[in-house]
Image (cartoon, rainbow, N blue to C red; front, side, top):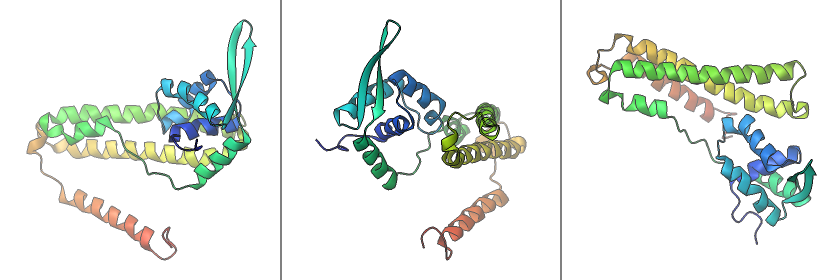
Length: 220
């Protein structure tokens, strides 16, 4: 059976967690909740299914043990699993898929009221704030030498910066949108678009495209 025949990105995510340290399925689920769930949310049922698949393909090994009277299985990555993980890391990946219900509510806001948009934007900022507090705590823990995986600090810094920039983007957008609708009538369908704001968005996109296409850009 081909090693990667039916492995998913979630399979490799769990393999990556096992590369950090051997774990039980419960510990893997905890690690998913604490780390990967911020950019790769998956149901716990999937986390409990995947380790056995990895063992079947020789990518992980299972060791039976006990804590007191309770039996438990600890999974660890195998040399074959490390090679498969390295190959997956080196291969091209897919871009992000945005799933954002609050943004969808704004998209269809012409079926409601401007106050509906205002409440949705406040909810967006509250969501970003809640996760920002987590980012602050995690970042501070590494700056103060309390990070859980100090040997991974450099890689975690790259991911952490993206997650924080994403929250900054959400918060700035929700703040801007809230200011924009302050002068809107009760019904969004009666509002007029601001050509200056639209021009700014187009210019921003054009500048970003120019950076990519410039000599020395990513496509060179």
